[in-house]
Image 1 (tube, rainbow, N blue to C red):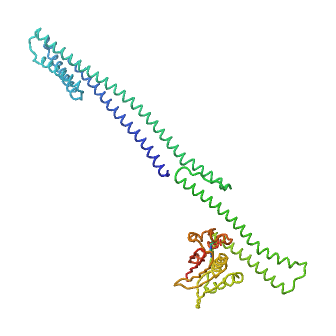
Image 2 (cartoon, protein in one colour; image 1 turned 135 degrees about the horizontal axis):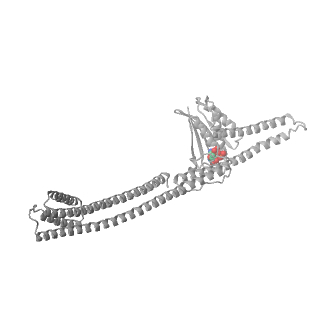
Length: 470
Ligand code: ADP
């Protein structure tokens, strides 16, 4: 899993949980609001019905007083009660009702209207007859009964709404607890995931780096957690392995240099042993070759150490060029002459143009490159044969090609020849070496703005061509 994926997944799941919780709570609150509003209307309606009944009682009483006393004050009170009754009826009509209570309301309304119609026959001077009184009492009873039924319906509906409010409340509570638990679980799961994929692998990586820094070269980081951390662990492990390999090769180089230095030093020691101060000096004709040998072996040691120091300098990025204009023919000639005395089994040949081939370069570095190419040509032609150095000008370039008829290099190895420490298995068996010469040569050529190319066929020989800007 990638860091971005973890961040997006954690944020998205927490946001989704929060959204779910918020919408659950909003829905719960909305449902609660709806039911409470309904309950509020019910209470108002119950109040309207009871007000209606009370006013009807007033109306009945004042109607009776009007009939008995014919007093205008009672008639006004009765009319006021009638207005109130109509107002409360209007109030009840204006509010929404269920199908049941609509039916009960219509019935009650009709009965109340009938009651009012019976009592609205004008204020007659004559007191009402017994039959009229009985009819009016019956109308009133029927209206009261209808209003009672409406009241019962309303109270029953209020109970239902109250039960619904309780249910919504319980559901809201359960949803709140559930949402809190889900949110907590989501946060814990995210923390666990972060710890598993990020924190613990980071600690393991840090422990591996600390332990490597403390000198444990076998320390390797475990490959776990996020992709990025796994990539860092892989990179760290590869770096540690490469450093271990490099160290192994450096130790090999040290051993090889020590081995290579032993031969000229042994020769020096043997020669110097014959010139001990307590012995008489040999005659001059013997002394001169001995001194020449001392000089030659000392020069060999010096060259080996200089090459080694050069490689260390190039590796440290301290390659400094001291450029001057030189004839490439001279450089090639000097190198060939240097190797000619030692390469008795080889025919060293030079192919030079008649005109000077001038180029701007650091002659010591270019000689170092040519030395390496010629030494390799000799070294990897164990059976002897022609080694040829050819100088030419090709357009804007000067080329110096070194060819041999030696063991050659397998095609698949040719691309890696200039890598540090690389030795081709086919030719590497033929002679000892450390795989740094061509690497250094390429660096020097590139520092001059040039390159080295190789063509080779196994068993037939190789040609290394140094191209330099002319
Ligand atoms: P070294 O010779 O010390 O191994 P170099 O960097 O000079 O290191 O060469 C790298 C490798 O290239 C050698 O080990 C050898 O396998 C191959 N090589 C170089 N020159 C030649 C050559 N003329 N013929 C065949 N193989 C060669």
